[in-house]
Image (cartoon, rainbow, N blue to C red; front, side, top):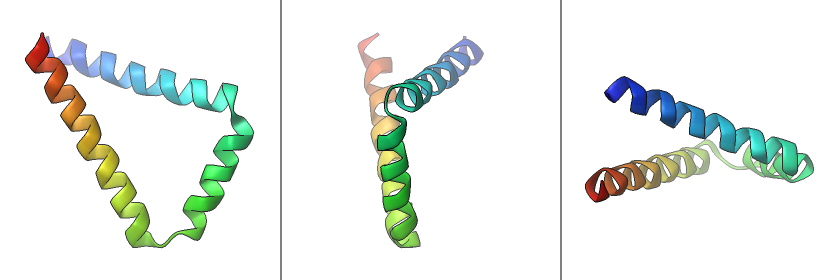
Length: 65
């Protein structure tokens, strides 16, 4: 059960990243350039924010089901 959800989560992440790369490759390049110009602390904050939001969404989806 847990392994199935893990595989589904990884699949969803890969599908979303694939859509972004396929549909907006130049926009992705702009985002990467902005990230390269930002400080390590800002990148860490962005990553931790994404982690927190993702964890919250997973928690909410588990509570609703």
